[in-house]
Length: 550
Image 1 (cartoon, one colour):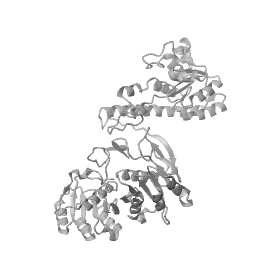
Image 2 (tube, rainbow, N blue to C red):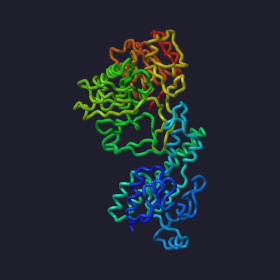
Image 3 (cartoon, rainbow, N blue to C red):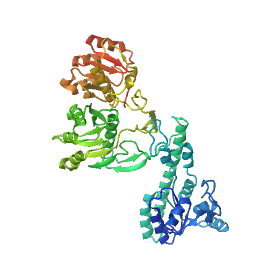
Image 4 (cartoon, rainbow, N blue to C red):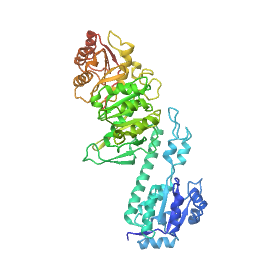
């Protein structure tokens, strides 16, 4: 029998959104309501007749509420198979009444963990309000047990774990005289098992972090469906966007979309790259990203100036690109963005002034195309110390590649703070870089970290003027960057994400007029590159740190 009429429902929820309205609907159909603790009180206060769980079990809630629903009269009523005569005889003998629906969402474990004091002193939620004891008490036991029992017996029982499911259930029960169909019950069971799996994964992750276990024996990742995308990297690929639960820091997943066309798979990748680069700087900064590589980046006294310099870094590549800003987009910047013959796919920024928002969302050409994303202040570090990458049959996991500032905050301070990777850098040549060259070297070095390897980045006046990205040989990347820079290359500086294997890169840089180079060092031919720099009066710094990005 595919339809099951709901006659008795057990309700026990932490998230009481829509609870009273849903319970009133059930009661209106003659469904008997059973409930626990705060849920029972909320329903009784709304005037509903509710049987307390202790009246069903014959036992009071005990151990500070740790034991409420863990009882045969609860789980027997949920788990017995209605069409099994032996099961029916057992529940009749023990006076166990059937429970046809379980409405349960779980203690807010992840939200409680999010309130732990952070290492930087910035906790999410109520600042630093959670303790380990709070977290332990928010590990739900009875709730997942009921949910799993109801899910296992979905042939006879409906399980409701999310207030967003209420409307669908109401609609179907209205259409079926108080009954739910088997496909619906099965779908609800699948969602319930996904919930308990994610819940247990979050608990395991908390204990692993508490032990300082960076590489646990098993990793269980849990993400929530955020939106279906039009397609993937190419139109013949289907795609969707999933986000981490309770993500609160400024990122693409938590950003508010203010307008424009629907985001694509490639948009999201590029927006993430733009934001992660621009957040590295403390002065007003703008970046232009194309195909997941920065083709322009600059800092300046104002955001409008930074954008102008960033866009002119490679205006040909910037057409149809993604913009990232680390300040509120103001009117002057918006006017520059919307100059004739410019086309931008997406913009991500902490906020937008009223004037800039009107410019970017009301002008006919821009209203129909550009996507605007607002992240809020870029003060929080990206959550989690690990980075994940899927390969066929497995998962690569590594610590994040961060340029660590001397302050230990984990965020790069750009060129304005102390020397991050440059703290232990060594000048290897006879000529030391000038202060202006050093500032540009630091800027180019940060950008190079965000360019696909092999990466060569050219910089002048804290503006990127040429990028060689994703080449199989470093000399090809250098040729590409020099060609992109054109006449602007004279007097610029060069950053290489990994060591230069031969002196040919230095010789090419010298011929182009480059005056200073930063690289990690580490080649067996380092001395040849150093000697080449001395021959050409080029300053060279070794950082000792590589920043491959594959």
